[in-house]
Image (cartoon, rainbow, N blue to C red; front, side, top):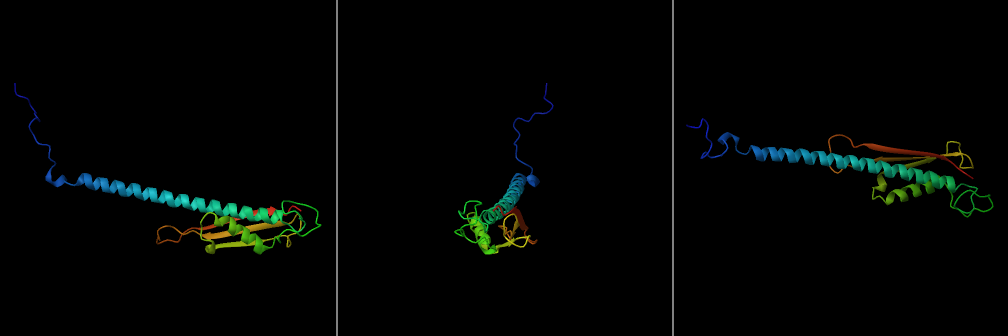
Amino acid sequence: MIPICSRKGRSRRPLPEARGTSLMEFLLSIMTVMFVLFWMWEGTMVVYTYSVLSDSAKEGVRYAMVHGPGNSNCSGPAPSTSSACPDPSADNVAAVVKDYAGYSFHNLSAMQVAVSYPDSTNAASNRVRVVVNYDFVPYIKLPWNPPHLKAVADGRVVN
């Protein structure tokens, strides 16, 4: 009996028009994977930068709250008998915010810090607001504008 289809002895060479397809599929797959990984990295860096900004704003509010005008020991509220603590002016609060953000290796010159006292003074039980603005700098320049990040923190002066 003769077999209907015998593949023994045949060579398994690809057809001439199909040469290089596996290489092209591999290259396209690798490019897609690298593209996705790059954008995941960029997204992670945006979230990290926003986290640094919000923590810096919170630190600035904490500094303004604790170092109010009635504080004498620089660690919390106390009777207003001495002025040994630094002045919680807007410039000092902004310096604390930038100092805190400086540990994250971000470009501090691109960071704008706005400190305001909505109740007009930094007296006890008045509000303080710190707004931090930052233009995110992506690793690769793209044709669209990079995201503008803004973090806001509010609090009350405790002394």
